[in-house]
Image (cartoon, rainbow, N blue to C red):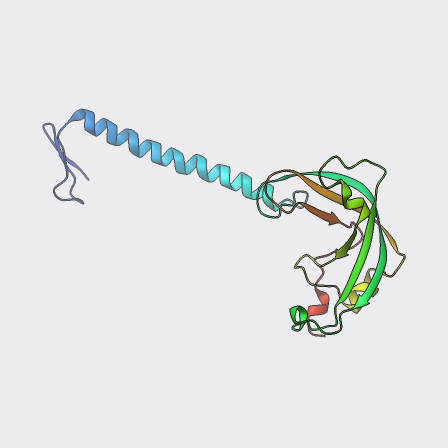
Length: 179
């Protein structure tokens, strides 16, 4: 607790520090109030941001980004087993490369418009290839058509594009668990 003697304030916890001026004391009080306010408002803002980022409707791949969503269909064009690949040698199952094409009736308004002409690879959220039981569980086979959404970045530095499949949980890692 500070001891007030005339115009001198001695702070017992910090020997040698004296506040000889009322103006300096007022400035210190204002600084302390400002710091407390910064923590209070900063904490509230970060908790709101955290809640927004945890929302399943908001998907970011590296920060607060905005995407334009295009509804369409994805047709599985090919499925092939990965025979021997060093990238996936630690998988507890044999991975498969699943290729698909995207179709939409809307025109894609971006530099990524050429995406309609390309095939894409279906990967799990952690970038692993799906396994045989995953393909069976979600009825993924050549020629299968799924409703899907192409998300194209319009603002920010996140993943430029990604696909959502309402009928396929790409975060379903059941094949990695022991039976």
